[in-house]
View 1 (spheres, protein in one colour):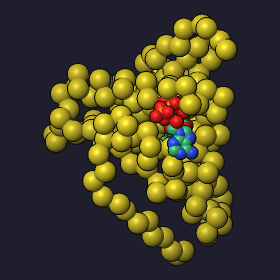
View 2 (cartoon, rainbow, N blue to C red):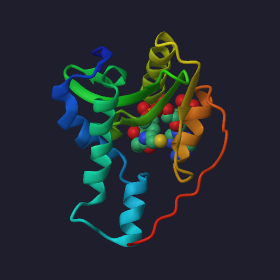
View 3 (cartoon, protein in one colour):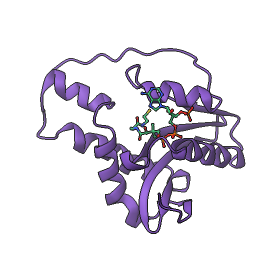
View 4 (cartoon, rainbow, N blue to C red):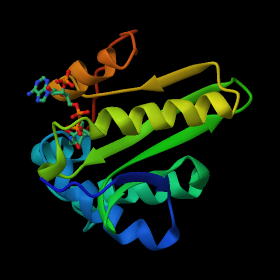
Length: 160
Ligand SMILES: CC(C)(COP(=O)(O)OP(=O)(O)OC[C@H]1O[C@@H](n2cnc3c(N)ncnc32)[C@H](O)[C@@H]1OP(=O)(O)O)[C@@H](O)C(=O)NCCC(=O)NCCS
């Protein structure tokens, strides 16, 4: 096991290609975008990996100061993104991933805690996160970090 310190630091623009790569690698079995592709195939010449990775581009544009990276000896092991709604004092975590080799060691939990601290410092009064019903880890991890289940959503799609 590597004893070098694991730091959570602010996102930098140069991280983006690696965050896109980790996203595609991590969300393989849990992304709605992949489910859409399974059901409808590829449309518009873009696969689920491109669309899912684009979500991270959107996060870092919408709220770069809410994006954090977990790093050990220069290697990115995970990240979390946050959106801030100042008008409603609501923070949301749209994306979170830890590389497979570093999972189950508490890093996801640390990233969530970091994001919650950031939201509190930004004056947010409520934090939101969502997960797919098929994502067993999310459904264990989020309540254990203090989130309470509020409602369930059903995703529909059709080809045009
Ligand atoms: C979700 C994710 C970020 C968690 O990262 P992590 O570093 O492994 O998280 P932690 O180690 O802090 O916690 C994982 C928890 O899930 C539990 N867990 C692991 N596999 C599980 C399973 N199949 N079912 C239920 N719980 C599970 C672990 O025991 C641990 O809980 P504990 O601390 O109470 O023992 C990581 O699994 C990941 O990147 N997944 C793919 C992308 C993803 O699903 N992102 C979130 C989308 S909503």
